[in-house]
Length: 124
Length: 192
Image 1 (cartoon, rainbow over the protein chains, first blue to last red):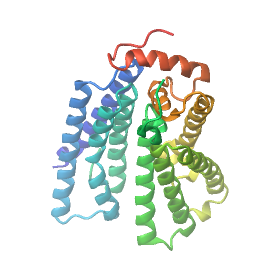
Image 2 (cartoon, helix red, strand yellow):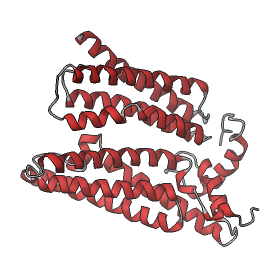
Image 3 (spheres, rainbow over the protein chains, first blue to last red):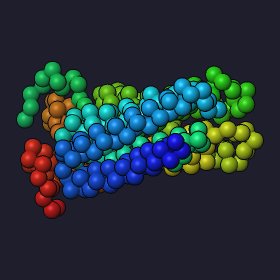
């Protein structure tokens, strides 16, 4: 169980940073958002939803963190990040669309670190 | 040259191009700061009232900046300049205050230690915001006398602004041309 808890956030951090790197490269090359970025956002979304599922399962199992309200806020905000980024990437048909996606990748990574600070049982 | 159309009343210049990245980060901070301040004030206001009230104030400033940057009308831009300025003064003042008098801040705010808890993004963000606003308003002012619908022209320029906020006004004009050629085809920008 703890192995699974640690693997998912770590994967999200790596995926988020990789996505941010590729998106910034796209911005630097003055390209718009492409299918690869959209697919990568989809993968990130799935990973974040898995993480939300793991946390909800732990909460349902009776475990409670100190900052429950903050944690619930994170559970709501986390899956919205890739969705918002994909929406803006499709809307902004210039190099700045991928730049927004890069921000989303970094945010996903930072959210995992913060999540660990809120509830240390979620190992990163 | 575009004639005044209904779209001219909706100039979206500050929300396109690099502005979209700014708005994304501002929206994130608006959400994070207001959620954080809300939780802190609701659950443990007595612990650090000054810190929590400053968090709430920061949240309001971030919301104001997000909305005004997204609206992008001349009035909204003026409010955006004001809120970015307040934000910059706030992060510098609260940052200094939190270092000089840590007893007042037993719990951190967004602006404590010049935003060190948030990777110093709160310190950098208003600078980029002001540069972005200044660049765009400067461009619009020179064009407004020539093009009646500065909004439409500004929108095109907003999408073509290159290298973020760092470039000079001359570079902006060059980018409008470069972007007009590349926007549809998504081909690499011609070396300038």
